[in-house]
Length: 189
Length: 352
Image 1 (tube, chains in turn brown, purple):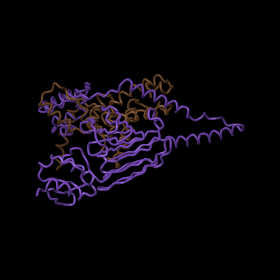
Image 2 (spheres, helix red, strand yellow):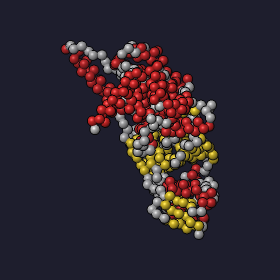
Image 3 (cartoon, chains in turn red, green):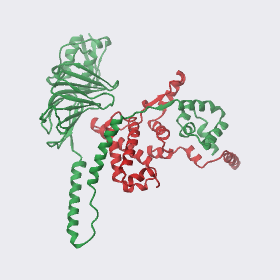
Image 4 (tube, chains in turn yellow, purple):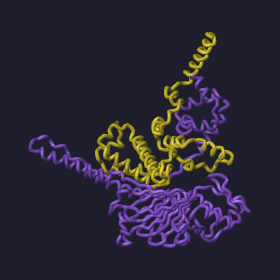
C-alpha cells in the first residue's frame, strides 16, 4: 500500500511522473532488447504500459509493488505485440515462445579457454526463462517469488524449504526422525 | 526433509548448481540464512564442493549486455507520451451531475455526448482493421489491385496482407512475405514534403520500405531481403536497430542480410531484377546454386546437382520461368545434365 513511487502519480504530479517514465524507459529498453531488435515494438509497449498506468492512477494505491506491476505489464504487452507482428509478417503465429536470447550474455574476458567452453555449454543448457529469471532477479531487483509469478515458473523447492528457515540444528533432528521412521517401517514389514 | 535434500543435490553437477536459483542467490545476494544453508549442503556432500566452486566462478563471469537508448530517444518518447496523456485527459468523462429536474436534460445530453465520444474513440483507436491476404502457390504469380489503386505483382510462393477498408487520407500499409513488384499510386502533391498520411509502407520481416509514388521490387527470401528501385523515391528502415534508415536512388539494389545484419548497396537493372514478371529469370552473374535456390523458393522443389563442382559455375542469360520444367530444360542443356525426378519433392541433375 505504502509506495512513494506511485504516490506522486496518484496525486497527478506530472514532474514525478516524467521522472518515472524516463527511468523505466531506460530499463524497459534494455530489457526489451533482450527479446527483439525491433525498437518500434519496444517503444509502443512502453507508451501503452504508461498510458494505462496514467489512466488508472486513481486505483494504484492497491498496488503493492510498483516495480513488479510495471515489469509484468511491460513484459505482457511487449510479448503480445511481438506475437501479433509475427502473425502478420509470417501469416501464421509462430508457436515458439519468444525467449530471452543467450546472445545477451557477456562472458568475462579473464576466463581461460577451457572454462569458457564449459560455461558456454552451461549457458546453452539454460532455457530462455531461466536466463530471464537471473536478469530480473539480480539485475532488476525483483524478488524471486515475483520473478516466478511473472514467468509462470514454480518457486523452487529449496526456496520453500528455506522460507521456513530451518536451522542446521533442526535439520539434524529431522534427519534422526527420518532414520527412526525408516527403522519402524522396516520393522513393520 | 534430509531425504529430499539428498535427492535434490546428490546428483547435481556444476551445470545444475549454475542453473539453481537458490544457488545463484548464494553467489549474488547472500544472507546469513542462505550461507548457512549451502555450508550445510557442503557438509553433507563434501565431494560437491569443487562443482559448486566452479558454478560460482561461472556465475561471477557472466553479465548481461547493456542496451541503452540515447538521451534524445528518451526525451522524444517522453514528449510523445505526455501529449498522449493530455489528449487522454480531455476525453475524461464529465463529473457526475447532481440529480435535479432542471438538469435532467443536461444529463441526457451528457450521456449521449459520452456515448458519441466513446463510439468515436472506438472507431478511431480500437476498430481493428479487417485485413485481406493475397497469396500465390509455388509456380504461380498474381496481379493484385489494392484499395488505393496501387498494383502489386506477386511472385510465386509469396503473400501480401493489406487493409480491406482503406480510406482516402489514411496511411497505406502492407506486409510482404516473398517477392513482389509494386506500382504505388501517387497521392502526394509535393515530393519534397511528404505527409505521413501520403506514405505507403511495405513491411517484410526485417525491412520497411516507405514509398512515394514509385515502382520497385522487393524480394524477401530465406535470410535476405533485396529491394530494387525502378523509379521514384523510397526510404528503407530496418527492424534491427543498428542499420540506419536510407533513401534509395533508382537503379540501386539494396540487400539486407538477416544473419550478418549487414546492408549492401549495388547497382542493378530493375528490368533484369523484375524479369520474373515476364516469366524470365535474369540475375547478374548468378552461380548455379543461386539459380537453384531461386527455383526452390518459387517452385517448392528441392533441386540438387549431383556433380557438386557445377554449383559454382556462372550462367548468364535469361532462364525461362514459365514452368519448372522449362527452367530445368534450359539449365540441364547448359550444364549438360539430365533431369531425374527422384521423388515428388526432389529433383536431381545428373551429368550426362
